[in-house]
Image (cartoon, rainbow, N blue to C red; front, side, top):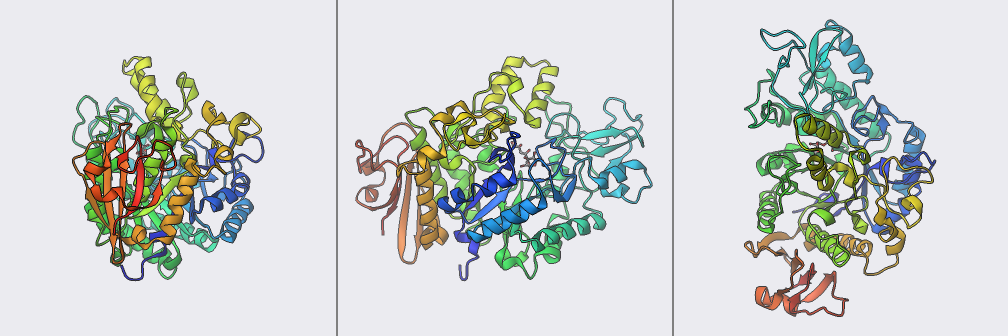
Length: 566
Ligand code: TEU
């Protein structure tokens, strides 16, 4: 790649502000709290920080329901705090990316308040309004305009009494979908985006941006067996005008500025082919996307139906994405975010014996790939899923709605709770564990969501000066990416595709070949047999070669190594 973009050697850190650091004792993280912890990010070495939404919001979906895109919610602070955070981050050479949530707004956004006020309001067509299904009366069971289900359980349509019509909400009923067919909507969004760029932000993570183009006549979806619903994603994922809207957004917002910016589109259901089109620089749409294939390999019929991950499935998936975007486009690389359970619990082993090694093994496996790695708050210290005594411990609307919906349909509450525990998004949202003090140094008040009891042992303070900590390993991985062009741009080749425990691949550039080999299991494997060339190779970074039982010829439990073999 000649003249590679700056983000091909960058690492992004995601902050979920509600759970990061609370400065005023109200139990909710805030912007001044983030400003007070920027040295942690600088020490880690990240280049960009992506903030989950901090805009004014009723907080129905913890800020992904926005009522004013150009103001900060008082729970998080003020616009002055935001300006200060941007300045402080820039002073440390860290860029700031905002979360752009424009598939939908809050139902309390003035645009929707106007839109719902009457069928003739000028903003009526800013959202998706439809009459009851043909031949049925508004309010009748099954009278919703389509058979789609919301991601947060229940129908994707809400009847609005004022006008007797339904409005579409793919997420909660307090998150009405914007109608992107309407050029006024697109212009208003572009204007707001330019306003944030003028304010100094360096780009956007774009929430469910593949849903902004829908099949305009909103057809029913194919029936989903065992449910009263049809699959709405056929009409709402990657609709016919998506590339047109993304190219228009690039022209209207980024053109002329984009050399220093970064854009990443969250695209549930994205295929490699679609990602190639979206991230092809020649098409000037987005820089990269978040795809979901690798975080759905351990799911059955739904996200609540968990099954063990097969490593060969992971290799096939990540390998396909590496190959598919090798010659055009770019990958994002992630395990964790605010919607996913903690990787060390999900894909690693968070038992005391293996937690550190499996966390550093998973990090090595991910960061060695070609793409831009995303570190989610707490992932750098091996934070794990929390314990959930009963449904009252949860806060996430997705989890709470699922519990209510599943039990209302007759599922045993204990079974539903058992399904929530390993999967709930709240696992990612427990407060960041800064130290072993009460509430882990996150707040001096009552945290909005309980701190994981394991914070007494797993916290930033305990790891900062430990050269073998999960934190130190992330620091080393990030430094390696910054200094090594083979890690940044080298060709990716998967090895051992059929091995169920060992994940290995090479990265090749003109001047060297690196071999990344990871034992994604608690069982030793003979490296000498699997990859003989690895045994004597130069070790650039290992995660357990400091341990007394380390044997160069044998991969120990969760042993991960980045080697130079040529
Ligand atoms: O998530 C999009 C999305 O598809 C999630 O619902 C995800 O599929 C699921 O929760 C993971 O299993 C984005 C935001 O990241 C999420 O926090 C919001 O709730 C959602 O959009 C609506 O804005």
